[in-house]
Length: 351
Ligand code: AMP
Ligand code: MG
Image (cartoon, rainbow, N blue to C red; front, side):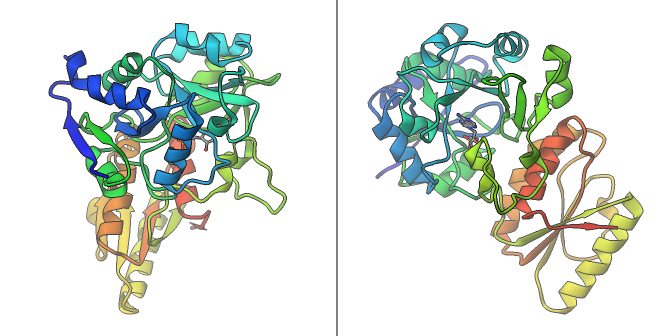
């Protein structure tokens, strides 16, 4: 299949004609990748099981890993859900449109082929102008997991999508680099107490400010045990991972830098190609290896923004090993550390 790449001229002043064909493809059961404020999504009609199956095929994604249905405005929510719990209503008021996904009891129109067989449906309303406009023009809810091959780092620019999806989907809409860079926060509001299933840019602190008590699913920071039955089936799969072995080093900054320098020297001596993930603050303190800064520690949003692109760059550089600095687990740091520890297969050295 020929994958067409369409560039949006000015994302501040989108013309409907630019997105008309993409919307038509979605309505007809085809696949279109498009930017959102979190990462690039791979879209298909969420109410069409056959279209959803094509998403799983293009990504190589296990079919029990449910998809998030994306809507453009509040009127599009009620048809998809059996009810809207009070916490869901309040969180929607506070954070929609935006990088928050909520899990609701599903209505009959949402096929099990979209929800991985679950009786719940995850819904998000993106704020990105291209995403929001495209969904509205399509006139159907749009299932849109990250537009990467399953298991690889999520795409934060159209080039990443092209690398993974060229030849497998009808169209890629290029709206430039995304804003946030990590996937949406997921909160399950279908039960008694809202539960955080995946941390993102809407932080646990923000959620608690809005609705009071919010539980945290243990799978967010811990490795899955043998009898692990996660609420969000996607949590059991290895995620976001570069091809190299990634190892996090956690502790006070001086010890972390010293240990990484030591390990890079040792492994380089054994003929490994070694990468280092650091920050602008520490960049000049590394002596060897392929050193890449993910941003400014003092501005965590820069780290979220660059993280996946740096992991992809290391794939291209074909390194064998990557040592990475660690980050605080508060606020946006919880999302950053969640992606990093998963990408590292929970391999963390404490110094
Ligand atoms: P993504 O790959 O970014 O589209 O993330 C989709 C993730 O959302 C899945 O891996 C699940 O963990 C989560 N998810 C989607 N639907 C549900 C649901 N009905 N219940 C719980 N988690 C869900
Ligand atoms: Mg994903």
